Image 1 (cartoon, rainbow, N blue to C red):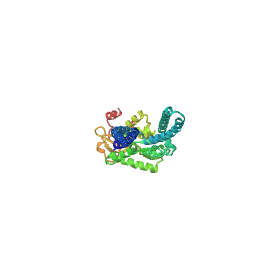
Image 2: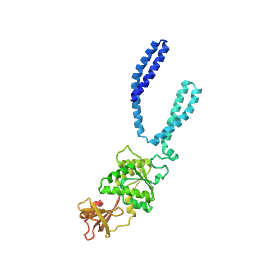
Image 3: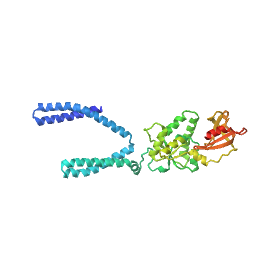
Image 4: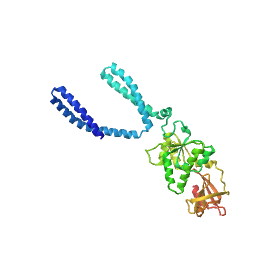
Length: 359
C-alpha cells in the first residue's frame, strides 16, 4: 500500500511536469498531451522504484526507533525542532544577503547542523528534561519520588525471602523497593504451580502487600520493559544499569554477574544472617523439615531467619512438623549459613557429608 501511494503521487507529479514541459515546447494541446503521457509512464516506473526505496528506508528507521527509548525519542524530536528554529533564524540572512549559489547551500548546512545538534543534546539529557518537567522516564514512578541511589531493584528470590519483611519492619532497611512488572509475572506463574515453590511465591506477593501498608519502605511497580533480552535475570541486570538502581537478590550467581557488569548488589539473606542470633554447636533448635536434601537420607528445613538446616538421616521426618534437633555445626556460605543438626537423641552426623558441603 505504501509503495502504491508513493507511485500514485509520483505519477500525478510527473504527468503535471510533462504537460508543462509540452506547453513550453509548443502551443499545441496534442504535443502537451503527449508530453503528459510520457511523464505519466515515467512517473509510474520511477514511482515504483522510489516507493520501494522509501519503504526500505522507513523499515530501517523503524528498527532504529525500536532501539531508542520513547522519552529519549520525544526529547530528541523536541530538541531538533528547537534547533531547527535557531538554524532557520541563522539561514534567512544567508539566503537574503548572500548570492543564491553560496547562500542556499550554506543555509541548508546550517539548518541541518542545528537540528542534529539539538536532537543529540536533548536525547542525551532526556532523563534530566523529564525530571525538570516533573515527569519520569520510568512509567508509573514519579520523577523525584525517590533518590535513585537509595533504591533497590528487587528480584523474585528476594521477594520470596522470609527475612525481607522483618528487615524492613525493623527500620534498619529503609530503601525504596522497585519491583519490575515482569518479576511480578514470574511470581504469579510460580504461585499458580501450587508446589512448595509456588507457596513461597504466594507468600512473597503477600509480603509486598504488607510492605506497602505497614513498612517504612516505599514499594513501586515498574512497567519498564526490556525487549532486547528474554531471560528475567538478564532483564534485571540491564534494567538496573539503565535505571541506576542497586539490585536486591538472594541469587548468588545473579549477584556475581551483576557485580561484574557494575551493578551493586545486596543479598538480604546474608544481611539477615549477620544480624541473626548466633547458633552454636550443641544447642537445641526447633525446626520443621520440608524437603529432602542433596545427599541421600538428608532432610532440609529452614529457621525463621532463612538459614538452611540440614539433618542427616532426617528424610523420614519431612512434613512431620516442628521437632527438636541438636546443632552439630554451622557452616557460613556466600548466601548465608547452613546449620547441620541431628535428632536430639541421636549421635552426631557423619563428618564426610558436612565436609563435602564445606568444600
